[in-house]
Image: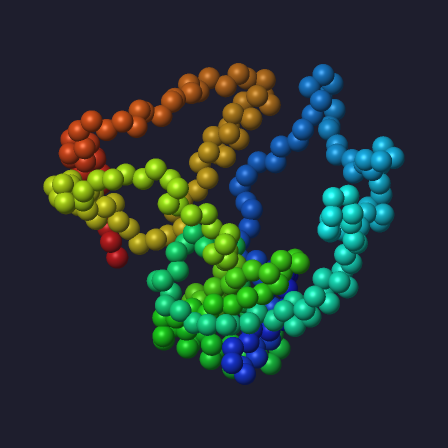
Length: 262
């Protein structure tokens, strides 16, 4: 893997040189092209000057900020670095928190942090401290001209930085229409639902799950490539209305196999 970023993790007076690597990858999806239906020619996108009506070469394109309607100021790479040079090279841990206090709605993208040259001991110190205390580091860092919140936690023998959203970036769920049901009126259903959950519980193994939608779409494309018309029947999902919750839970329990829990 090639590092995405290099700098240092700091907490207190401890400074840990690290390299950041993307911990996720886009894989399995199919790549599609846009074509002109009439002659099947590829459709391209051109960056055109709205005033002159001509295509602009990449080396003549700059980034600018509109400070008033129609008034812009050009921002260079040096300007981005000048904004706060320390922030662009430092993942600064501001606080520590209990790992189970952070809602997954804040998580955006994971990165691996690996120790840079000479950083093995302080890196191991932070990793083991977080592991023993069951805490995570709450940090801020700048990546690709954007400041983000970061959650640093141990995963095995590596530190993982989860790029996270600021509170202002998460929408308030209170505007949603949510059910108003007295939980006490669902005791029998709850017992059966918990039994169903227990029966379907397994140790988490991400490799046990795969992208079956892409596999089915690929088969359809292969059929068309070979001059065949796909014959699979499109099935609409069953109606979501539940009239007898107990009956549905009971049927689910009867159909659900007992999973082996390690």
